[in-house]
Image (cartoon, rainbow, N blue to C red; front, top):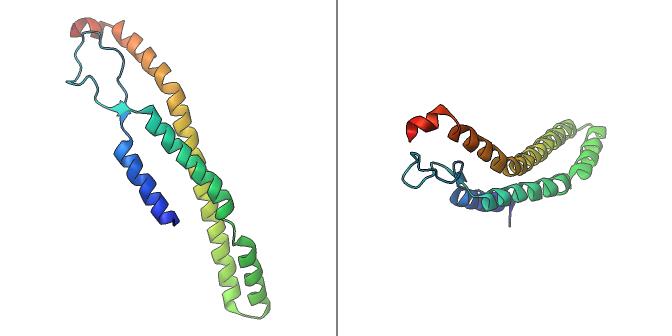
Amino acid sequence: MSFEEEWSAARATATANASLRLDHAPPSGGATGATGADLALDQDHIGAIGSEAYRLHSRLQTDGRHAATASAEAAGALAREGFASGAALARANGRWETQVKTLVAACAQISNGLDYSLSSHAKDEQRLYAEFTSSKIDEYLR
């Protein structure tokens, strides 16, 4: 399966499955939406997206660089023979390396960010729920 096919499949799965549930604190009789949630977070799906980002990160580190040495050697050989395409190939190889590093960093950031979000979400939600229920706003909504 090509990268484009894998990426399209992963994106379609993430779009179809990712739902954020940010207000799943137990209802206290206060005013909430008809379902009790405006936005839902399914931790299994978010975790799966984070895992895929990590897998992509790992594969890009190796597969994204498999032609780097051969390209550099070819660029050097062409340049030594006086071909302008040697310098062009060296620039293209350098640009490719830069882009791969950028993608690897982005995948790491996505994976780490989702891991952090999952681990801190429950604590934040409990804190917000406690603050809200103890506030004057809660008294007015009852």
